[in-house]
Length: 337
Length: 256
Image (cartoon, rainbow over all chains, first blue to last red; front, side, top):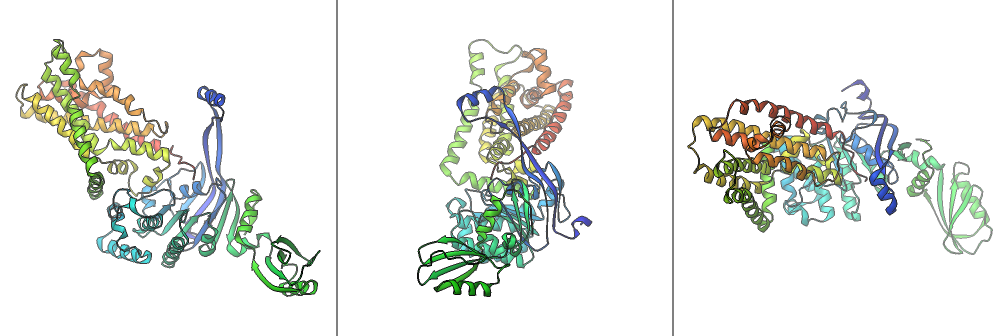
């Protein structure tokens, strides 16, 4: 392992990926024109991002559609060449030592299957056993352990094409992790799954993480992030806009709480210091967003009690969805975690 | 070899998953490949022919070409379609995730057992042709075997080129036709072509080695030029493999 990689498992510096594409237009005239003369355009999918991932962690890579998450993951897996910048994963430069490097990692792409469609997953597993040269005893033990975690039973012996999406995704995880990789990249691993299948996959990730596997996942499902990720990196327009832990992410908009209030009687012109009414479901049901860094919760409660009569109250964290949405809408202004 | 064996087993299982399709593909490939010398039969049937070559000698060239194509069909022709589709659909990263050489993986994951019927068709044609030509000698068979291996390497190299071009011409399904028209030159005696064409098919893109040279060796018509033609084959193969590896760098995936 090189010195640079000693402090962290993954080290990314000024990573950039630029694609060259052609502007074709949408109208018939533009299409015909582009057939003879195409306008070349440069697209910066990833624009100079840097971050580190600690060994044994779970890092969530978030961003709106087209932000550059998947491109970043592809470069991290060594399957895409960066335009510039540095990547080191466990001391390997992925795109230089690809064949040796990918032996140490696993990857699950939610929309790209590694299983062979017409035959059972067990045959695909056998193929991976041959490719990675996994000894029989180790293979049987690891396959048994993972099948048990996923409660797969005989499912692995049915043709892949007859499996449900959830069953298939579980098999994708086994396929990616049979060779006991140290780092696993997950690109939208819970996409399209029902809540039970999602939870089973999250449990599996947690179990494997407890055994020492480092995970990097991209997802649009914030439940994945809240339940799994310890570190969050947010990318927008190809640039990093946040890098820190979950509690820091929640506090990017200030130390805010959501207060749901059920009033005993209507209170016209209600005003609470350092709190704004953000929702009004009915005359009696209000939602407030309060900045508790300015007014502590106890003082806030006193303020509310003195200004209105209420029959019920709940105080919650600012939903992650709200935090993320505001960061996405904010554009690419970097936020310190 | 373990990877190759496992991939062959998987390919056979995949092909046999649909029994009717497996049997139909085998049958169609066998007959379509044994009937392709129909043009040669028509040429000779009408009283014309290739000067200095009997019908059965030309049939032998075409039989050797078919066997070589059949071997390609079984072991590596699938590389083109797999690469072409994977690039277009953005699935090529799945191949790059395997801890082996990308070209090797492309080849072993593209094995098509049904191609064996093309080999059988070629063997049947060769048997008919050889029954009507001069008897074989140990020397002619050894020489033909060596040249045949070179021909197979040229077939493989052509597939590599076609696959590599797919990284640039994404989704172009007409690439095989383009190369196929050049490969057609390998099915006929080379001395019927002008010198420039012969130079192209022997030195620049040595497709003549696929059918003509090995068949000429079997017929005892090989000369020094046949052995010299091995050199361009080796260069062509090395260049094709290098070109494929180089073109992988152009892979850009598709949007998520």
